[in-house]
Amino acid sequence: MLLRVIASVVIGGTSLFGGRGSVWSALLGALVIQSISNGMDLLALPSPIKFMITGGVLAAAVTIEAVSRQRREAAGR
Image (cartoon, rainbow, N blue to C red; front, top):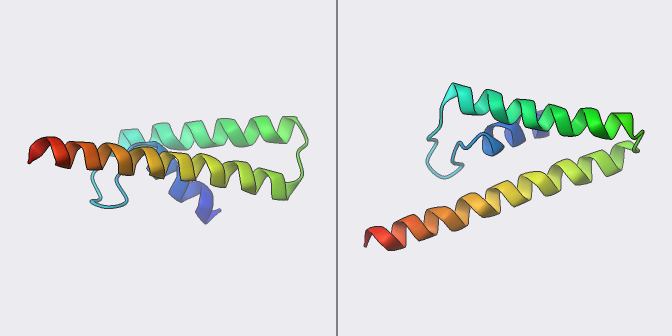
């Protein structure tokens, strides 16, 4: 459950490094994560696979956010 909450907020655009974001973007992230979860339920995937996919989506979101943060900081210097 905690993984879904964190993934929802990160996918919604809240920075793990600075805590910037909005409620609406977190709700959008929750919608995306729940849609992915619902799709996996419809495919009847085993629970470990669901966690791996959700973790992969979370890792991708964090990586994209970290790279974009580095580029913003480099452009601001």
